[in-house]
Length: 340
Ligand code: F6P
Image (cartoon, rainbow, N blue to C red; front, top):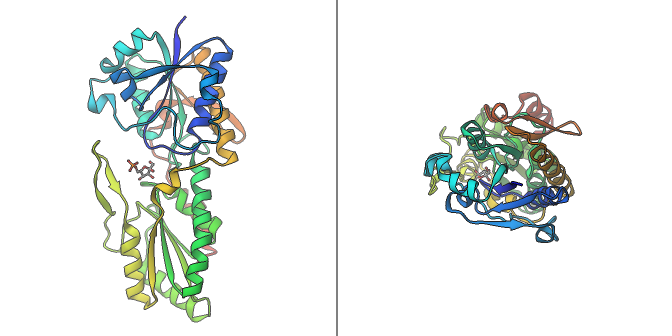
């Protein structure tokens, strides 16, 4: 009897261990062998795997990160596609792989499916930019971390009459900024999907301060072009991906120059990906993992589990990663009623 492989690939996020635990528990309950693949696709390319049993995944539900490790190595970019994995897949008798990944890793999974490796995807990314699912694993926790930070930054901004510019992650999507900013009561939210009018923003801030509310909380998504029109980046990572980040510096400088109020940049960075998942992400990871294991046990492949309302549904994996799920302009409009 063959085995099911499970791996986590791409950037980590809270909730990955909940999903791993669920895949292993459900598959082992059916008597299926589970192979934990380490460091994403790298584990199949380099053969670093370990058998996982129920006892190996006890006590990890609330733990951040991933017990399997992760990486951005991609068999199509750093190897020979399916050929780089074939030896491991055959020697471990892997019938299908549950891929817990973001859009890049799921796109690779869809390609491998076409080339002959059966896959079942679980959408995870704090960016929440994967299509055909209401939400991705990890997003809820990242938003909660942003809100906790905004609550703290608001009291210090208030004490010093400052403009606080809080940069959040999201790559090209503004979901974390929108939901974090809305829940934190930000006076302005800047996202890549909606252009920023700095004249208008500065005059709104001035008017707010003149009316006696002399501090302002601005949330900016990392992928938003700065005042100069460029997306800020600190270079390229070892896998060739742009290291997006740093726009809060330019935005704070611009707002200070235009309004005359003291402005401070704060980049939340990797705090948003670390630590314990919220109850929502623990439940979502568990439900995603149980369903993914059941699909693999039934011999289904080429699918990704998704949340549709309250149901966990399989969708075609290739269609899900065709287009990034950008912010819905109607959702952004709802937030604007509360701007300064
Ligand atoms: O895709 C998730 C994410 O956290 C983005 O929001 C961010 O731009 C990127 O990953 C950072 O990636 P890395 O861990 O490679 O620096």
